[in-house]
Length: 200
Image (tube, rainbow, N blue to C red; front, side, top):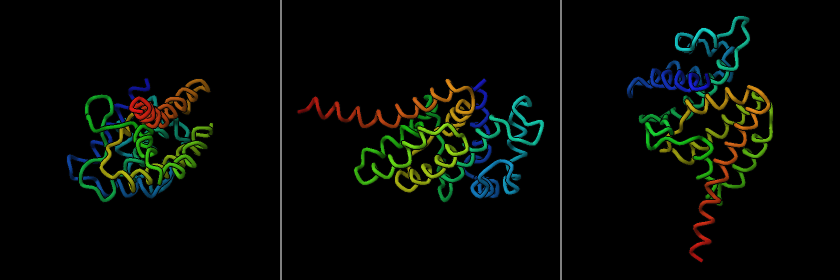
């Protein structure tokens, strides 16, 4: 089930990028609408609702967990893609060797002493919160930081949608997502520390 969220998000991102001729109007709407039920978000509704399986669509006007997850990931992609000609989306699952999970990319940035404190200040509270809206808001700031500091990095936004879907599930699933994010974020530094320790 969660894989469908990832696959659908990947299709929508490719639709928006259009092989290097991005749908600028929809991307602009995504950047300027924090939530799917915002009036400005309506530009992306036809694309999202045509792609998402009917069982994931809202019946009562309140966005479902799937809609919230996919929309948030598309918005992060739109924020990151702004002003860039090459796509910033890459599948970390082997399809695109340049693609990375968001927290793994942030972990690489964390190696830089100049950005570590500011990053930790944003990441650690995000990993501790159980509120999906707060997590999504925090992630939008992290994507902006990543864009400013690591412009060439491709991020697997489709997998991030899957993670966000899981985060809104059971307590156990949400904990698993947070743990994986923490492992990706802190692991980069640990791997480097071991290498340096072996040299000494």
